[in-house]
Length: 255
Image 1: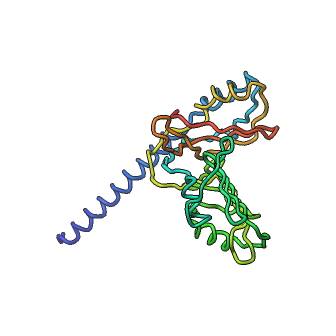
Image 2 (image 1 turned 90 degrees about the horizontal axis):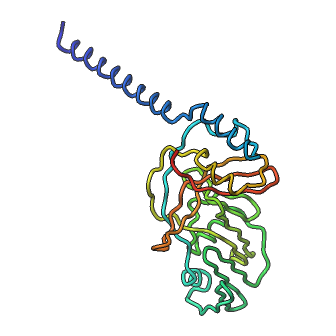
């Protein structure tokens, strides 16, 4: 047999072995991430025992893996430069900082702000809104347009709960109103594995003592602020919606 033929056979065998090993790893990974049916059934029973009705079909069949990220909300000084072009003096009203100049008003709270200027709102496209808001310095790279001048924030394909950005422009494309709780995503963090809504059951029982029927479960992110440094990390979380419209967000823990 020619050496070239032997080499071809050996390379083919190696390729087949690599494909087999890769396939085995994928199957093991998929199997390892699957939540045992008995665990899901037990979770439904535990909730039902406390008056919370949750159909087993609502519970994800697999554990989740999600990437955390770090970020921050714009400061009053940063917002002043965005809207007024310079740092304007603020007045303190309760827990709100307020600055006024040229008929415009900027109010800043810990994580949210609102801006209003003179002028009438005109019909604006998504593209016009994105360009105007991005021109101010707001991070629009993870914004998903909801219509009516409103954006929601998504990271890695999942919603960042509680984040919103609503804006209107005048006929010249200048902002006449902006209301937002809108962070910037500055750095990727840890990779969380083995995430499941089942680990949130104790918190669910505490926050929904009156019971009720669960109509929606959604995985996403929520901001968590460090008490020591004040820095924000955006952690995997679950938003649970009840039949009466009430909803709560629970930070994920492993398991």
